[in-house]
Image (cartoon, rainbow, N blue to C red; front, side, top):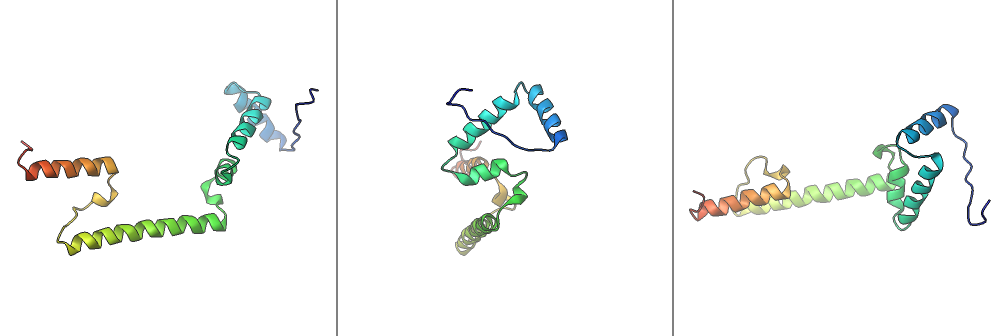
Length: 124
């Protein structure tokens, strides 16, 4: 064996190996090619361990308690920011039509531009 190569040994359920080998073959990979690609991906993400955890976790429900707390903190800040904007608009007498909160940025931008054209009489 070439001195620059390393060998990986892992124990997995025999039926899982059979199913995985079949899936890899169907995709045109050998187990060795798949492991090399996976390890390369890990090496590329060495400075982003949270991304490696996402790749390895079976589902997003497997967040660590710290990750769950951080996600919840960010969601709370986003909701708080939306409430501040709504309150600010209401204080200025601006009403936001129902459903605007959930619009993607591009669609919201388009609606705003159309409203400006209408205000200037250029929407005909």
